[in-house]
Length: 117
Image (cartoon, rainbow, N blue to C red):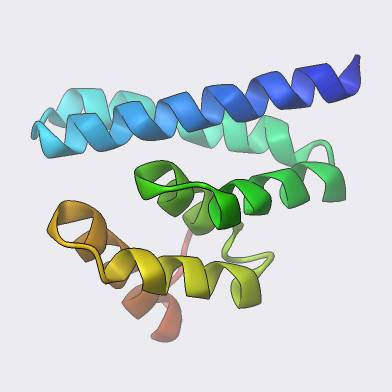
């Protein structure tokens, strides 16, 4: 039962990450903010599963693509920098907003300005 709930939370996280990226691309500030709040809430629920939740999220970063991989990497960076930095570097090579956002996340991490818990 707990594993099913975690899997559901992870699917919802992936959907919210995709919706957030779409809102950012569309310059829909209110939509992006709404999905950011949803992502924060889902992340808080996922990490309540401890190591299992954090591991599943970092696997989403490593195995995923696009904005979903990027968002999972951003949320996992504090716990798994050695696994998330390569994901963000790969995404930073992409053109467009995704690449830019990944490169900014890396820069902030390297400067010690990371705030996300």
